[in-house]
Amino acid sequence: MILANPIVSRRALIGGAAALAVPGVVGAVPLPVQPGKAVLGGRDGGWVNEPRRWSVDAAGDLSVFTDKGSDFWRETHYGFTRDSGHFLGFETPSAFTAQLRVRGNYEKLYDQAGIMVRVDERRWVKAGIELSDGRAMLSSVLTDGKSDWATGPYEHDAKDFWMRATVAKGVLRLQVSADGKTWPLVRLAPFPVAASYRVGPMACTPERDGLHIHFSDLSITPPLGKDLHDLS
Image 1 (cartoon, rainbow, N blue to C red):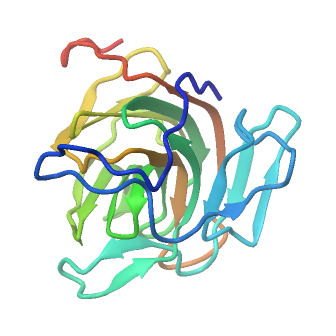
Image 2 (image 1 turned 60 degrees about the horizontal axis):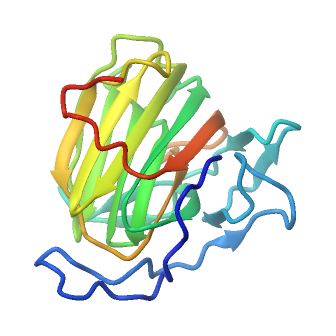
């Protein structure tokens, strides 16, 4: 993992913030990963809802097997709130680009994996592949108090894809890639301003357990700042 900027305190406040501004990362305290062992290239990651089964290989890649009933969702349509999904978060500055590679085989309704950016349990986004209506869909859930859900068919190999998230100045940009080289836009949306965030791999199986996901190639850098239609 590449982390290029110094980390701002999670509890710092943004001075002179706009209407969307919120404090730094708060809420559930992530659990420590294995002390002294690099995971996805970093040593400062921490779990929100550590899965019972996970491992790190010699390259630092992360394998996760999901627990039953794991999910992230708040209220909309279903009426329930769940904050039980698996998320390994790495702290970021107030603006960043993060990307990672995700490999897995989605078999049951709502099986999902991808990237998550989180302020706390009420403010976050998750994006990646989710099985819905019998096929793999490109899915994103943006939550600011309540969740929305946007999906579309994914026309490439859902078993091996890349996700990228850029956050800067209250704007979230999500991109997907089939090869780690070409990155079409998935979503452009307002996002809470914070002194820092946590970003990293996410996996959930609301209807079962045992989804095996392999995460690799995590990088966290300053925001790329590319034109919206620059797909590199």
